Image 1 (spheres, rainbow, N blue to C red):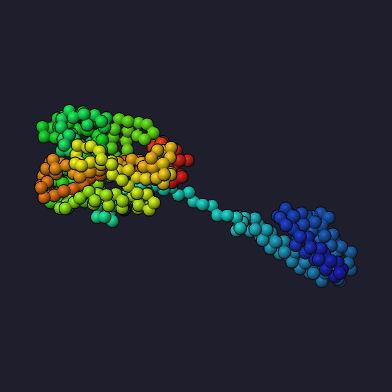
Image 2 (image 1 turned 180 degrees about the vertical axis):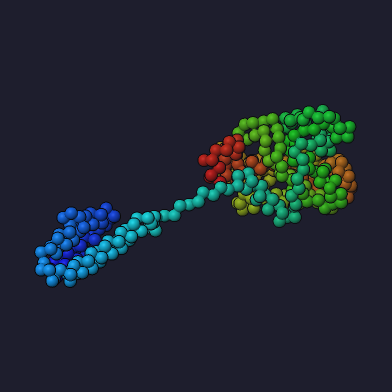
Length: 340
Ligand SMILES: [Zn+2]
């Protein structure tokens, strides 16, 4: 009988150990304790033994039963614990968190402000709905001058102020010029004004709302070479060291002399291509502040001189990244925006 007990233990142990899932263990239980199971058969044999041997063997069988039950219990808890653990493949590549970023117009604004702040320009903010006086009158544009139509301005229904006139959505950031002179009162002035502007135009190079930045520097002994140097500093920092600028004579009411500023084309590096034709791309306008504008800001034009410049942020981005249509900026197409 002892040999049989040992054999049952061995067989039961083997069945329990080989169980890979809980279901296998259930099957092992049936094979051990079921109707024709190993233990059941063994226990039945007890009645065949002589009366005197029964208690001793009975105790052994009980011990065996306990041991097998213990083993089953342990195995069951180890199998269920393993099942409840999430399976982790530590060799799998990590999941990247999707993080957004600033719109490319905001990025360009931040970069522009950073470049000019190194030259001592500080960022100011002026109204986007402003009086006719600041948008036109103070900038040497007489009433009914056709220049007011050039910009296809949005006029705002408002009462006419006897001193400042009607109100407009600012078609440029130059409305900040005289406002800045009034704020500072005594030069030096080194202003950067970045703001939204509005014009009734929409095509590949225009959107009805766009961003412009305006620089204004007023001091004693300011010359065109300072203006040129400031542009070159901006251009090499914003577009890269291979790009350069040129000033081309032009006419604006609020600067004298006036220039258009060109930058070498980024596609052909100034050699001439389909986009630029002669190697240059027009960046914006600039010039020496007109004495009448200084006077409008109550600054003495016989003592102080200044230069001013301005251009569209969207245009500078398009020139830097060779985007063919600036309307892309405002279509909110994530496939486009994700590229920057
Ligand atoms: Zn080119």
